[in-house]
Image (cartoon, rainbow, N blue to C red; front, side, top):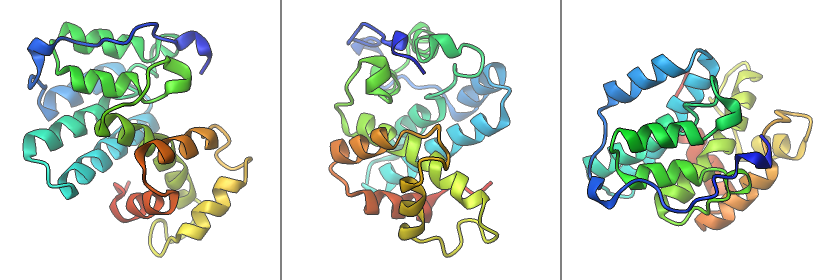
Length: 199
């Protein structure tokens, strides 16, 4: 990604659309129409799952859990077809569909260095936190015969230090996201290991 992805805006969606959120089947249909890369689809499903579980464990109601889930599920929906317009396309699509502005804002802020939008709400911060980290941990699981079973924090941290491993994953963003969320990296890693969506 390049800095040309800066969205140059700070307001997303309409307050009139608060509470308006597509169903899981509608969100999956959007993915089916937009994304051919199966690995990318799996990544988005993983992040959506982590977001939903986190909201559940925080005690949020089902509607709020679904809000978090959709934000995670659709955060990279335009990357496959329109990488040069990531994440402008998905934002415009969700605004056209009159979706809840909280979901749109979370998606807009999941890469502050690239999109120029700062994660502010808890949902914003957790999407940013789970995005890169879950990708690295999943890559690590694929190289282990036992996958996620018995995976330890120290093994993940070793891979984080190895810049050649999953080189496309930004270590800077992982550290920044952890700090913004106010959650230690170790705690975030353990949460992802414990609650990861299995392939």
